[in-house]
Image (tube, rainbow, N blue to C red; front, side):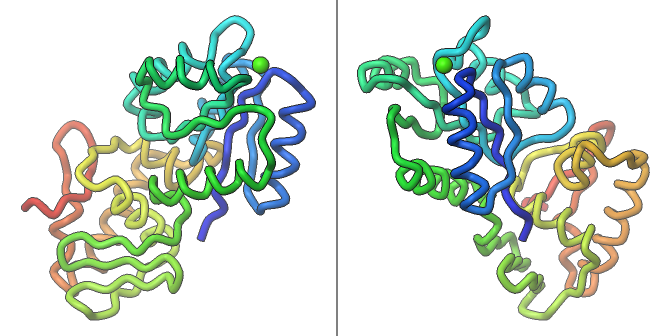
Length: 229
Ligand code: CA
């Protein structure tokens, strides 16, 4: 299981450090940003599993940034927990219906925050522990076991990560660059055709149990996992 990475966007250094400390203690990786501009720099290199976003930020507000993130197909699925300074603010922002996954009002205890994070990651499938099923295929992240029609399908580590990502985002089409970002990590330099190589290997492995049909090529765009054949 890969460690979830959380992006903290908070302009107050003391709060940001407290958050980073609590998250590291809980075993998460963090990226830290004091502004939306810094957050965007992080996102250009890698996508976090969750964003902790302060509402009151200089220049671009948390609400405005949420709108941007939700408009961009690359980032719209990243869960957001909004940090607000007062309960009244929380109500107000809730009313805007931005598609934020949860809210937490300062001051909050690390324990409370961690519980919220865990719940949101579980819902998004990014805690990595959820058993995923699609058609006759089943992937269990706890045991790293993939089965098709009940029989084991051995996979290499990259093929496993690729399949895990696809099954977490079934029915969505990803181009090669997006797959590189999500599955390989944005910091790694890999050529786009590497994706095709691993897609081929994945299909070959899945074909043993006739599950290769779920990895579909979308002409001119990329690939998707779909059980609609
Ligand atoms: Ca602030």
